[in-house]
Length: 289
Image 1 (cartoon, rainbow, N blue to C red):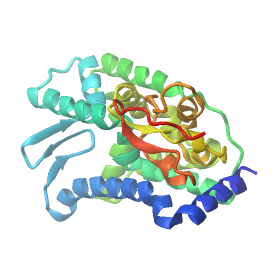
Image 2 (spheres, one colour):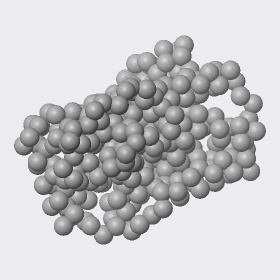
Image 3 (tube, one colour):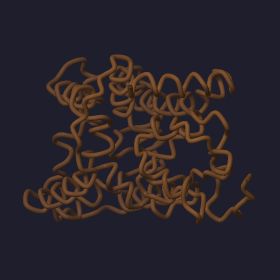
Image 4 (cartoon, helix red, strand yellow):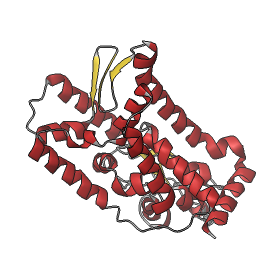
């Protein structure tokens, strides 16, 4: 029953709001992810070096350093001496995600999210409803484990198995064992558990989720009084537990959980426009009866 239910809810949104409004945030996310990947690929494949490096550490136009703060944390744990550019680059990333939402990296930048979303789409189309329950706290344990591994080995431990890095290398070289890890992520999400990788296992998402708790831009159920309980937002959301306090609670309609990807899926799917993007400090609008 889950597959048909999801389809019916989406058809309702399509009928009432049209194709473009039902896919607006999805289109923006995909454009952002593809553009980010294209910028990194343009150098090695076409000689257009707008950005040098990878998703973990890069430099824009030879002037602006960007460093994944999770990689920086592993470097600190591993006892590495930190250069000023790495610290500045990590600070810029943290500042950016404190504004737009820490796990926005997962929904708007990470190319592996395209892989996991594709697995979810295929899972839905095939009606694969068997779902092995995983504890989302597992990603926090993996996060702690990678920091411990970095401390013990003096390396940036996660980079040895990071699907994002493996995918980028595979696209450049055209082959490699890294594609096996990407395929494993796809098959895990397809056959084992819904949103298994991004929602339950990935330590990068866990790290940015900790930062994202304080972010300025939030999804808001500002029009929650109009909710018809169709369930479309819960079905589309990669982290449906984040919606409940905002949609059904008596306090702030803002989605305040650091687990939220700020992906806008709930905005796309809702046929009665319950959700929107709001600033954390924005006043709470009156609700409909």
